[in-house]
Picture 1 (tube, one colour):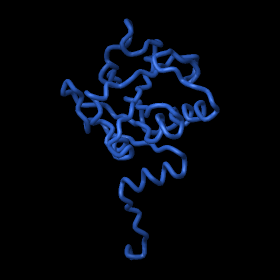
Picture 2: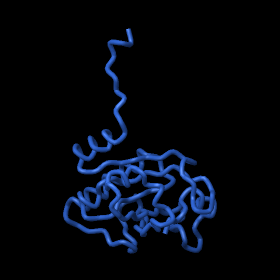
Picture 3: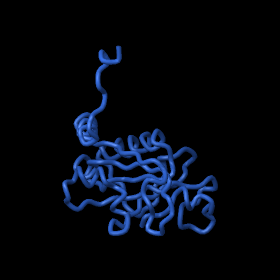
Length: 162
């Protein structure tokens, strides 16, 4: 009976290509603990884009510590902003991605330390150098990682890759 069912197993590179052909960009989600940080601590779950540089002229974007569904919604918002012709300044605080006028910031990822975290993007870019920015999100009190007052228990959920 199962012989009549279609085979939905598609090679990973083909899935990425299909997403890029369909949307102009793809999303890759990585479960917690798969990648190791430079300090040897397990990494939280994270998701990142593939093909943002070509689609929008912006580096790939990574978000740490949020579910893939939440990241997809944020990536869609970012793609809508960029697709409308607006730009997102790297390093500047922005307001409007989160409810309640919460702040967010895009910071450059240190690729010499963390580049191995983005294997699918590396394959997509075929060995050519590419940049990644981390979108950092606020804790429940509105503080961003690296700021005095940021909730310390979240430093493992959202480590800075800068």
